[in-house]
Image (cartoon, rainbow, N blue to C red; front, side, top):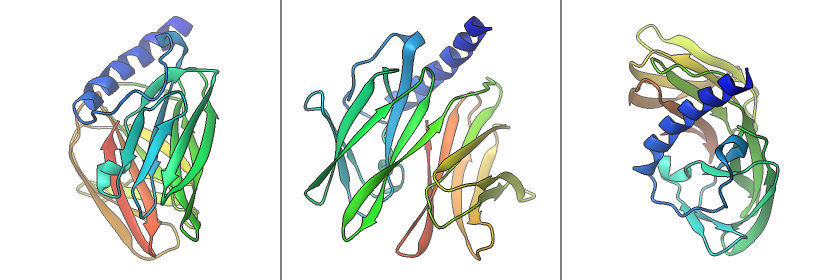
Length: 224
């Protein structure tokens, strides 16, 4: 059973790497461990200003902007079970972040506003549970602390795709590889934010992020 799980995640990661290498030309922040002992970390900028992520193990640096997919780094493979440290730089301020990942775990470190121009971090953890080379994997990350339950709807009949996503958590499901336009809203609140994912590709992973800045709800997506 364990070997089957490893093969499953190995297939998933092969697709992930193929999809990210072309999009991001980022330095490796951490030392990579053996594939059977790796976890995966990325950083997401959910603030109104550009930020930088600096590895404490060297001079590697990743810049994150405020423009759509420029807000998210790629996933970095790292040794699971070891404490990983980095420094977030924003407005000439620096804050440390430490995280320990479990084998196969995907960790999204979200940088959010903390008031008075400061920032803080939140962790969203995910362990892949399924993979289907004939379908696409779609996730909704709720990065809005004031949104108690996020919902994504879309498709020709505007069906509910993912719902009841609590703040700083994620839900994921397999969907057909179709051209998809969707909207994300907060249950009990008026208005929604549109997101156009275009043509989904079979075997690929996609992440949609919901955040609110300046009282305006926003969405963006990246291909993992």
